[in-house]
Length: 509
Image (cartoon, rainbow, N blue to C red):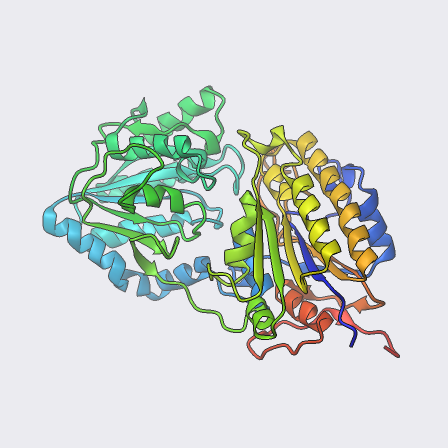
């Protein structure tokens, strides 16, 4: 076989499928290159959510889950499902790391601090997991427990935290615990080393410094009065919350790593340089899952190892692969696409393009798409890589802002990039698969609440093939993309991959 070079996977993050609608930023935008691909090239729809990707039925997909499934070529059962199952079976109450944290504070009569995104979103956390942790603490005889609630508004409607806070407050009242601080995820869950944000969440948690409020609900209402949605609630100190003390312990209940790393690093890294901080001598710090291999913290549910992922197969066959993305999605196209492996494989090159330093991405809806495209087109033209994996971040990141005009501008920036990328691929005789990890940009208004829709969607996403004559089957999911790429490379699909190629070669080829 005359193998095309490069074979490329282009992940348009958050570029979902939906019929044309006034709040579908993709259909509203002027997208001549995308429209041409749908007219001229074979295309299909693939599933990105729920049980298709190892999540509970009906649960929206996300970038971490999407890239894990894309790179693994199989359904990867996600941490949300793992923790749900552990709670259902009682395994949760027997977890050694969680029990050790409880034992440490019980022995010293100190306070157990429970961190987490208090949200039903299921992307970074689930509020039911936090409630289960409080129940476990009570079973273990913990008398002093303080909840530090991070508010969502990205994977949930922008002003939807009241129900979650009420749920947590009722649980705390029943068990004799309290909510100590409330912070929007903008502060507590940064992932771009904007340490000034993290410092404010840290100061509230550790030193009881922040916006004062009598109750968590009062803090939320004050934030709304200031014009702050859930995501942007300023770190607030509730009632008589006391500073953290030596001997206290922390359990961080987020299961997704990328937005839990920075706050964790501030607590557990001895030579931390992000900001000046008072560091209590904690008796334990437990992460629900592994946030980073180099963080000196206990992990309650260590990662499961995946064998024979797409990147591993490429390395085993001596092929050169390029991963390229801007900061916001760099971890996804590297760590998550590699199945949770941080190290580069033999023959792997990585290009990181900095994301723009703006407060919110509706202010620069193209983000770094033009710069990523410049480097990508150069790499395609040079033909030094057998395989290229690229993520375009702005459809998802701008979709999360809920600003329709910016979302349309983001779609048009992507379309301009598509024109350049497709032209470069065709010029060198390469093969290109264009798809998404989940949807977002195609739905910008929540029909039920009337608010901006800032979360991911549960519908399918398009997959388009640019290359040799072929047809694509229907009924696919993200797990089928890696086998499709191996098909294009004329490489065998390993037994561990349960996905199937989407390519259907026409008769006579």
